[in-house]
Image (cartoon, rainbow, N blue to C red):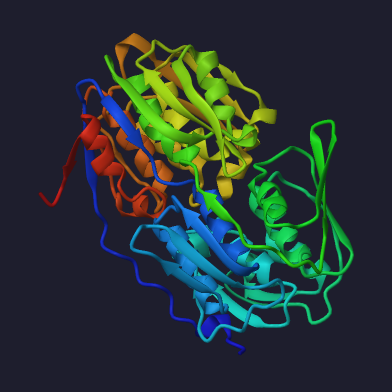
Length: 458
């Protein structure tokens, strides 16, 4: 199958769904957030690359992950949601992917498309990938270029953007690559590609990023070695392996948990507990930062599930102080900077976030989107290419009253809805629909805690 990217019809935009958050009374209650999105993607892909049946409970059933499940079916794996809510994946083995009959649409998910590209890059088949308007604007060359080291060939739009056609290597080679910008997506794509290459491939990252792929590869039986070299990490994977199926439970997504937790810290009188949250050290930077700001957080019932540390997190309203977030912490909280910026608006003093240029190439330019939205809500902000600074309003409170452009970005939408619960005047996001990509029940869950949301269509 060879499809010209230019011949692919672009997905049509859906109708925008504006949503307004009003100042709320105290948020109270105990909730569980959806399963970790990063782990959900990886569980489906590694299950499809295994021989036998992998069983998954707690899988996030947001649009991003469901698109990855559909992609694994397109590549020949059997992926079934059972009546219990658990998922079963009957894999085809490393190198066993078959050529899909149609274009692979990854929707809004940069993680999904990049990891899937890596998983097929060393199998001699061709697939074409596309996504929504946001995903089609994101750079894919940062993945397709290093995949060429294994022998894969990619043809996309300018800048390597989607739609993109990838042909896997007929005779894959092991690769050595130093990831130039900290990115768990790029690293993971290369580690997945290495599974079907002979010998040992070596991937180096200057700063440690989330290590779910390394953990899960080892759990599925791959030979993985991780060497620490100061802040850098060197990961070596031996290829031409047979992965064994596993049974795993997906912990609650720490990036999703950040929204009700930060909302509770902002809204006076609140106390919220989020159960079963994954606390992988490579993703715990937000909680370190919140503690530095003076947040009243408790980590209860600490345990391990599926090879990942997990705890119940209790958050109580707190009078927070602005802090400086060091650049070396950025990789461990990259998805949490939007909600941190919203929280910083309610703190006393300035919060400076450095080392955040990766936010420029997420679902939106998140630095620009947060800066624009905060200014619309009466908050002073300074931004540079690699920095965002927020001047908190402290006891005066955030004025609010803004209508925020989300740029099809789920985290921008949720961050400003949380801010609106504490602001003096309501805050409206122009489109809440993208929230379904990662946190489908966010509005209902927050309303169950006491949040006040109003939909413009009544």
